[in-house]
Image 1 (spheres, rainbow, N blue to C red):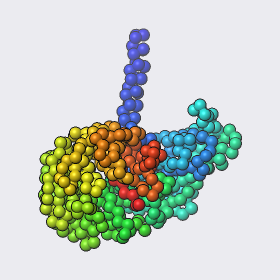
Image 2: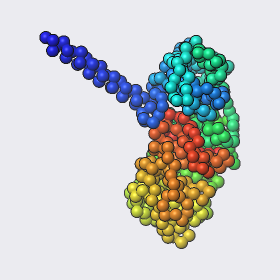
Image 3: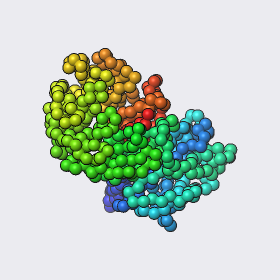
Image 4: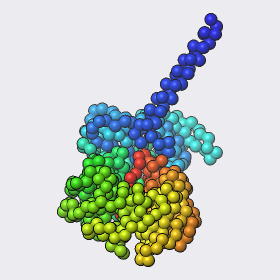
Length: 482
């Protein structure tokens, strides 16, 4: 009988532990918290509505190191408080510094957002040795009323920006009364020092400032936005919405949708590129195995053709006035006439091709299955060399004579110069790097990292880490308005 009494509590503990692990596992799969490198769990979306994102920065970065644990972030939609977070969030002002962090995001019912509310669990001062001195919370549920109520429409994506005043929060006492204000709502327009990031998981294109690397706004794009094409001359942004089989035309001055180009005769658009003056878009139809050219002014299909076996990427070569089209199954890159899409040349490779970049007459091709980058001379039609990089090289970019390669299988971002036969250095700090871009004006290198769900920022000169654009979702493409 005594043995029976001892076994039951043990069995109960095991059952409770199993239930806790199951629930924890479910939480980790919610929205953008599916990857271990991300910092917060977001509440599951409503079936219909608009999406609201809330970002936080410090009013002044050089402040005492304050630590806050937030149990919940809620928005007042009409007369109902709706949670935006699905778990606790920690704010460490020492780590946040001059950056910005996502506090919550969710698709909520259409309505009018009037206020934000925080459920604060704990507060502490962090000493130099990392230990915490507990603070008493004077107001554990501060409410921030919006200066102007924010209308949230169907399939819209809006952003709200908050500022934490650490000095006013502490006031030199053992008590903390968080002072949080609305820094800006989605203020538009800003048409310089901007970059755009497509996020297909949440039907959103985020805008961020390249002077401060802060998210500045968001645009709702229904249909899984993928590739982005910028045309500064006409102040247009073209967005491929792959699930909707459309290209959306956005006015950069207002961030409003001007037109929707239906992709006739394209079953499953998977990639998009443009010519030098952004007059034509070249789209890969992965299901039909077609390459199609669309006139962006009229929105009409001009021509389409089958090229190779399973096309993945297409790049325009301005000096040669040709397209480079990668074909995975026959391990080749085809050089194609952009007018009639006739194949001019086939370049055989030693591995499955991925991303490409051109520098004058040299075409760099990532050979994903061989862990190399091929350097091909377009003028002499000769393979010059193969450069060993990291695992599964994916995208290639050339900037100021340096070649950058994202290795999504491991190895960060490899860097080498023209003529080198090996990568001379690499950028660490990225787990699953994918897309690459650079801000020439501000000298930032941007690396999309699926693991953290954001854009890693590096100094383009020193190659040192410089920050993070925190999105908590997988970025599909980056386009910098230089």
